[in-house]
Image (tube, rainbow, N blue to C red; front, side, top):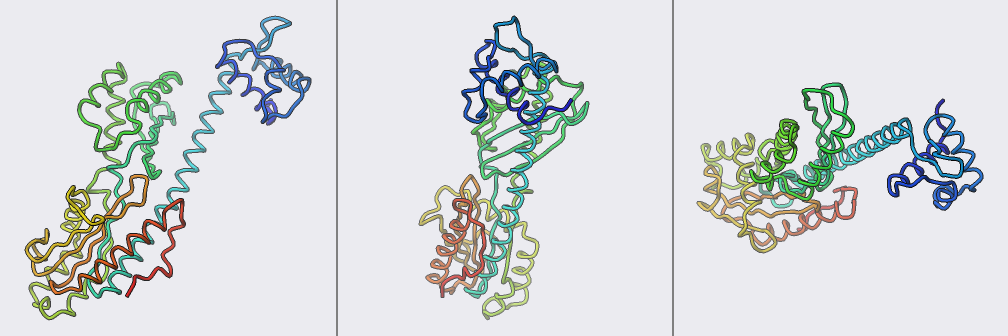
Length: 356
C-alpha cells in the first residue's frame, strides 16, 4: 500500500523526533509541529495505520511509537530522493545561469571592440579558486556511484566512479560525512598533499574510493581546460597603419584565433598579486606578456561575479591607444558585469552599451 502525503509527513516527523531523542514518540508531541496542523486524535489514528502497515512499532500500550526497519528504510529512501531532486533542481538552475553568463560575456566582448575600435577578449569565470560547498555520493548501480560536486557560484559537476563492491547505505553516509567534513570550505587549489594524506588515512578501507573522488574533483575543475575565452574585433588592428605590416598582422590574428597564448596570459594576469587600481594593469610594447603583441599595448581588468567566479577582460590595440577611454570603458564594463549577476540578476546585457 502506497502511503498518502499525510501518512508520509507523520512518519517522517516520528522518525526524525525519535532520531533526536531516542524516546518513543506520542501523538501529542507530533501535533505540536506547526507544519502538520492536525489534532492529536487524527495523528493517533494515522500512527495506528502506520503501525498496522509495519512502519512503526508500539513497545507497550501506553507508550508512543518507534520506527521499524521498514520505517527506517522508507525514511532513508525518501531523503535520498529529496536530495537527488534538490541537486537536479540546482543543476538545472545553474546550467541556465551559466548559459546566461556565456551570452553576456560574448555580448560584452563585442561591445568593447565596437566602442574602442580595438580587439577585445574576456575569459569565462574560472572555478579553480572557488570553495567547495557540497560533495555527495549516491548509489546509481551495483558497482557505480554518482559523485555530485558543488562549488561556490553553485557550479556543479557530476561524475560516475566504479566501486569494487556494493556499499551499504551506512558506508555511503559515513563517506559523505568524511568528505564534506574534510573538504567543505576549501578551494580546489587548496587541496594539498597533507589534506589528501589525512583524508585517505581517515577513509581506511575506502581510501581508493576517496582517491577516485579526489581525482574526479581535480579533473572537473582543471584550470587550462575549464577556461573559456571570448574574443571580438581582432580585425580592428588593420585600422592602424603601424600594425598593418603583413607579418605582424598575421601573427596578431593567429594569436586571437588560436587563443592558447591568450588563455595562459589572461589566467596569469587574473592571478597576479600586484594588480592595482581595481585590478587594472597596462602593458606597453615589450611589457606585453604575449611575444606576438610586442608592437601593441594591452590593458586588462579583473571582474568578480561573486561566489568565487572571477575572470579577466583585456583590450589590445596600438601603443598610441586612447588609454583614458579604454580605462573608463573597462571600469564601466566591470561594473555592468558584476551588477548583472549580483543578487541573482538575470545577466541580460541588452542596452548596456559602454560609454563614449
